[in-house]
Image (cartoon, rainbow, N blue to C red; front, side):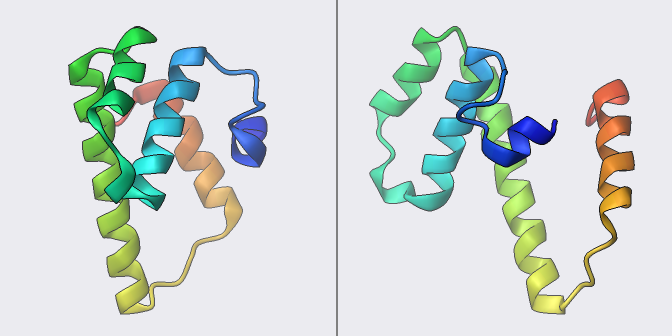
Length: 95
């Protein structure tokens, strides 16, 4: 997990995940540059249209939450809270 948060580009992760993270980074940082060829890269790597849509929805939700937290000046919990939540999500998933 630490390797991914340090640099997902060099972390020892599945290439499908790396492709998805690259796509989501582009959607986040330069959305006006995203084209259908970016989606094709995902499909070529074996990612389904449904998986792409799911990832985009999750990404959008995180962005909305971050904007709301910034607007409301929400305090960020200690790192241990995120570690516990991450461990829970790895076991139980988001749903």
